Amino acid sequence: MPAPLNRALEAVLDGADAEALRRATTRLIDVYRSGRPPAEQVLADRVAATAYAAYRMPATHAAVARVLRYALEVAPDLAPRSLVDVGGGTGAAAWAVAEAFEGLASVEVVDGSADALAVGQAVGRHGPPAVIGARWTRRDLGDGAAVPAADLATVAYLLGELDAGLQERVVDAAAAAADVVAVVEPGTPRGFAAVVAARDRLLAAGWHVVAPCPHELACPLAAAGDWCHLAVRLDRTALHRRLKGAALGHEDEKVSYVVARRGPAPADLPAGRVLRHPQTRKGLVRLELCRADGSASAEVVSRRQGPRYRAARHAGWGDQWPDGGTDPAD
Ligand SMILES: C[S@@+](CC[C@H](N)C(=O)[O-])C[C@H]1O[C@@H](n2cnc3c(N)ncnc32)[C@H](O)[C@@H]1O
Image 1 (cartoon, helix red, strand yellow):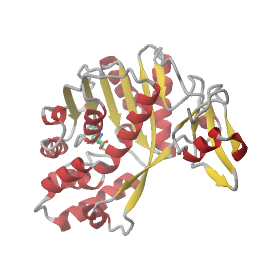
Image 2 (cartoon, rainbow, N blue to C red; image 1 turned 90 degrees about the vertical axis):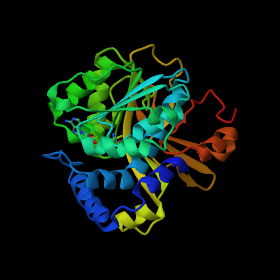
Image 3 (cartoon, helix red, strand yellow; image 1 turned 90 degrees about the horizontal axis):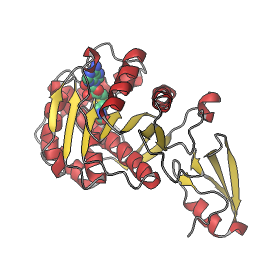
């Protein structure tokens, strides 16, 4: 995570009751690990919302930033001027979008938790200009309220908190509001199920996938009972380690996502997408790939393949992978 969000969090958390935040963090971890949609609002008070900002915002921000980077690699013409962050909570996705798109002029964060919005606004005062000027709108998406119109809608770490019917309504509302929708969820079987359902829904409505899929066919991983995800590594701050009682200086945020747009289809979908950490052995790199023909299988690249081998050694989990006809080092 770049320094500014960390610094903003430090500024806002300065003087907070560390023990209360630690207890609230433990409660949040229990709720999110349960793997069930919560029965009631999770960020129901200021301490819970502050704990969420401290322990989750860096990771959700890093995940959305990575997703946007991949989307831009496939569709460099993406240039939203306005964002609606649906279920945006403390605004991590809004930060990532504002950092990715210089031309972003207007941000609206919509969420059911007044406390999350208030904390997000306080953190956002230290953020990029579009976040400083954001509107923070309290709205329960379960009430069937429309999503405000914008060029881009982010739906990050929200669908998992909703039942299946509401997930569908929220995806439809985001698609009605924006020309580009980014759905981001934890990289778990459950998170992926919500993402693949959103992908199916958007494709059925005539939308086009920007990332991660190199095709618009049925997901080969879903068909195999597997789940498509990647890991984003981020450094933990000292505060983060204290709140989580964690010793490691970094964490790997697992994420599933889809970015889709109303049209046109991206001109250059990649030939493949790396589905796992590449395996490197003497003179060989094995890449598990999702391919443009809708299949998933391995490619083994040997040192004899020169530039392609060098590119394979640099390829990371989640990256796009060029086809055999192109020289990835070029
Ligand atoms: C896990 S947080 C994600 C926040 C933010 N998008 C992020 O990535 O850090 C889920 C958010 O969804 C909001 N939420 C859950 N159900 C909602 C509903 N029915 N209406 C509006 N917001 C809701 C919660 O208040 C919370 O802020």
